[in-house]
Structures are given as structure tokens and as C-alpha cells.
Image (cartoon, rainbow, N blue to C red):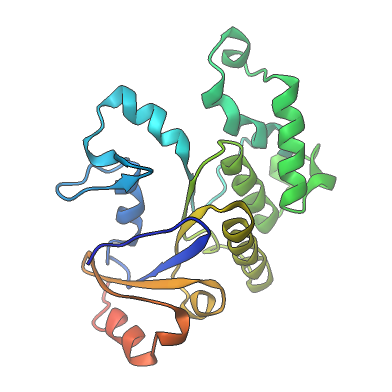
Length: 227
């Protein structure tokens, strides 16, 4: 079964440990090379793009990881602005300086994720939830059409996790982004996803709106999980 993500929707992938959830996201951007199949994003098959074209195409896809991976000594604003580096290839950016327009855009993105008041705070002073929202803003600075999130709330407390999922859902709807998010918490998927895809041993077992996902379908995903 093929997995699709349309503009404007949040699709959550659920599955047991070792089912291939993170591998799926890594294959999409070819951090892991797929061995078969196709990966079509905005008309391009990422699985077959040569290196130079792949570098350009990746700008249309932002990826958020389990940890925010911020530059600890830099401010929240500076971390967000680094998402724009792919659009600027000159000596100034090589030395870590970005055009003023990008810094202004970074401020606007921090406001979108509710953290403009922390723009000048060092990244290593942010809470886990704040850091993850800065990471999302940094991804948005790429101006992507697809946002991938690999268990972005795994290390967050329940309130911060809810905030991040609400944000991802809102970005999908308001910005027309396709958002593909891997989670390990079925309850969060049922609350926030527009569609839920169940993955087992690398295969999509079901792909349905939350209202159609039953407890027996979820049990089937985690049956025999020994990883």
C-alpha cells in the first residue's frame, strides 16, 4: 500500500519499535538509501535524483528530529535563521552571517510558534518544548512544502507534547503544508492527526482517519513487539 501526504494535512505514522517508522522518514530525504520503490514529492522522484539535484530538492523538505539539535550557544533567533542557509551561498553566510531580511523572517517565524519573546535567549536555556518549537521554526525557514517529524515529542512532558502536535496540525492547515509525523503514542495520533498510517515490518497495514481506527487495528500494530 502506498503512503500519500497531501498539502494541508497532518499524517501520523504509528508502529512498534523496529517497524520502520524512522527509516521511512530517512528514506524520503535519502539519509538512508531506499532499496526499491519511488518517493514522489512535487513531481520529482527523490529515489532517483542525482546528488546535485537531490541537494536542491531537499530544500522543499524540512525534517524535525527527536531532539531539537539547536546550536546551544546561539540565540533562538539565530538558530531559526540558519534554516535559510540553503538560499544563501556566499562568504558572509559561510562565516555565519545572514541577511537582515532573513533575521526579520526568523523573528516572524518565532512569533508563529509563540516564542518571539524568547528570540534573544540562548538555545541551551530553553525548555524541551521551547527548543522543539524553535526547531520547527527553523524548519519553516527553509520554506518547505513537506515537513517530516521523527517522534518530535518523545522527550517532552504531556503538556509540551500537546503544544507541539497542535502546532504541527495548525501549520498543515494554515500553511498548506504536508506534515508526516512519526509518533509512538496512539492517543496523540487519535487526537491530532488528520490520517493515521499503521506500519508493521515496513509495510503499511492501514491508512485511515482517526475516527475509523479501531483498538483492534492498533493492537495488530504492536502485537509481538519485542524490540
